[in-house]
Length: 197
Image 1: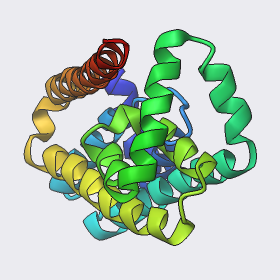
Image 2: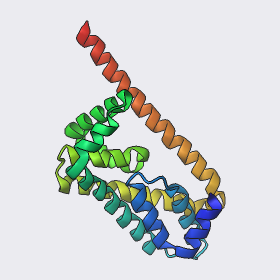
Image 3: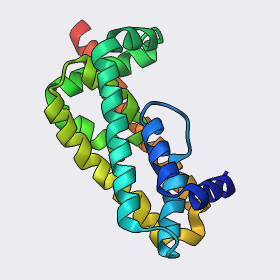
């Protein structure tokens, strides 16, 4: 997979990085982290221009997140109802809705980079709970700036170890998301136990 990502980035540069950043925000399973790391490695080698690449990735990620937000505004209820058929997913969605109502900006901000696998879901939930769009845009743009800088920067610094980095970051993100879901379900369970006591 790394070889394919390297070939695509080498051939199409900022265009492939932008397309991957956009579609990954809409739950399309694309190895965007490998693409971003590869792009950073090409910047280090002098084959791609850093500012152009950063701007393309950031703009595409923000547009992708905002497309998810608009999907949430227009058909979020139907999407969330479909996803909520699963009891465990339903609890996570309910928690996401409550969190976004109470701490909307920070929830969006951290979902773009620290808990990136949750980002597309948070975007749709933010739209469905009618979070104010300017607020969403501000927090989203700030978070995506960190995400793009982080991945391109790591690729720049450790370009010869792209595959190892992608594996490490994937495992770390998965661990963080699993931890977040576990804590959320634990808190919900404790509240339910207290309510029935």
